[in-house]
Image 1: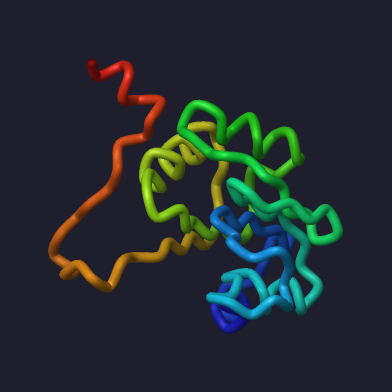
Image 2: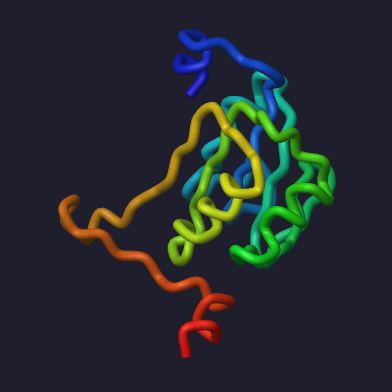
Length: 135
């Protein structure tokens, strides 16, 4: 990740990672996508549905299309952040769409995919807040 920003430069060295899935940066596990940026002195917001660790700015929030902008604003995320990591393994598409529609303009976005599915198949879960509107 650092190599990308060496090539394109940075604006504010701010990141957001949702679906953090670790209690801190040193716990091992699958690893944070923002680890190297954090180690390089970047600052950012980490979000997970269950974990909280204010020492690293990790906060417990379940994100949906109808609350994600409010959560980002609550933690004063700049509109033009440098990096956004999306990893909820569910309705990421709807959350990302809401982030962009709210005026956030991340310079680099990554999202994880499930290697159990072929690359030519697109699968996403419906955001539960949308489900009631479809019925």
